[in-house]
Image (tube, rainbow, N blue to C red; front, top):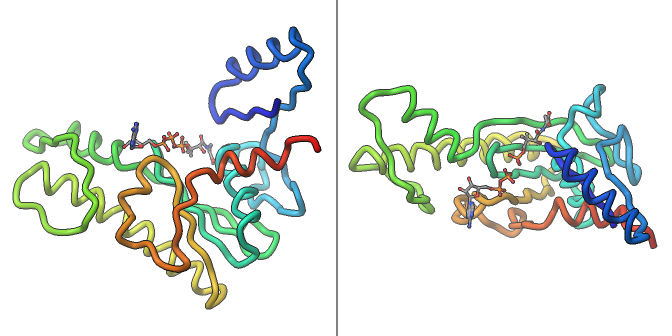
Length: 192
Ligand SMILES: Nc1ncnc2c1ncn2[C@@H]1O[C@H](COP(=O)(O)OP(=O)(O)O)[C@@H](O)[C@H]1O
Ligand SMILES: CC(C)(COP(=O)(O)O)[C@@H](O)C(=O)NCCC(=O)O
């Protein structure tokens, strides 16, 4: 059994105990300064979320080109890898966080629970909030694209996380959905 958790060491301990009771080999995967020849950008490497680290390791199973990983979940994160080096990344609010932040810090802005899929201009308050959030995510994407394309003309952008569907209209030959990157990275630690 291999397991990793970005926030819940209690869950890891429970799984570990169950493995011990049942005689199952257990490995707790954490962020390292280097794994499979890939180097972490953080000097304080333990501070990099293990989900981000596993996505980095997973991305290198798909391509050796420069790659930007955009994980659009609770937070929106970007991680860039060139050759065998993780160069670093960004952490920003995800779509739901942006939406709740704008509502809770204003008095007349309200929202609905819709998920916008195509960019456009809102004609009422909730639509403006939703499309504003989508525009922010698209801006995150274009900033990553701008940066990664400065390293090489051939590059890849991988999208994952629950809100990656919101960037569907930006998919292209080198912009692809890779929903399982974190688990693919984790799978590299399965003993053969
Ligand atoms: N069926 C779903 N259940 C929960 N969240 C969903 C679902 N479909 C899309 N989402 C979106 O996915 C986001 C959570 O993404 P996820 O990658 O699971 O988060 P995290 O990175 O925190 O694990 C939520 O902001 C939500 O908007
Ligand atoms: C940035 C994150 C919250 C993203 O998690 P997510 O929203 O995908 O659940 C997570 O990777 C984390 O807690 N990271 C620790 C800080 C860092 O990576 O620098």
